[in-house]
Image 1: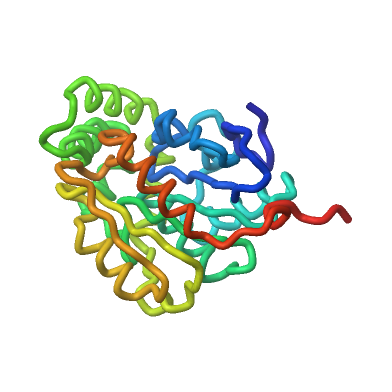
Image 2: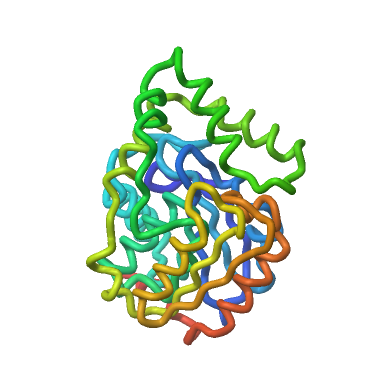
Length: 263
């Protein structure tokens, strides 16, 4: 798949009559945090990104959520994507919220997966992610906290292996961005349809985080996936795909909204 604005992306061709969906991964993630059933939502054009410095993307990771949001906007401009539905997990959900608040003209809807209005990071994780010698302890902790008790051990092992391949500077930058993130005073500015979705056993962003989003965003609903943890989309991909498709069907859309007019 191509690169634009230092961003690698997986593209699934969909129908022009359906709104385009942009998938944004969480801290230390890549587009592979979205399983195939979500990257290939039926009929919808879907773009799954590797944020700068992550996965196959070039450039540097950012230290603020707003900076990542700007990177996504620049990528959209290069592709001439005008309005899309953003679906973001954890840190990606923070990026999606920021776009909904600061750039509503580019947003058709928001899918906020395993995220919250604040994304504070445990001080030990923030500190240990900055040093190569303590980085393995961060991987161990995240692997322990990120999945529900029913998760397939092979899935947990694979996720840990992928995270161990991340440069410590990238994960530390992501954690720094998350730790400073706070939209509690501005959530009311989000006016597009919104789905707050999480796993019942999410230890990093518990269901009360999603409920808070649904309570403070005017046009929002909440969906909790039983027995799943923070990596709900990896643990229960079919249920998450079904929830997203149901949500997407409620979004008002006129064909042609997704593409910018050529200059």
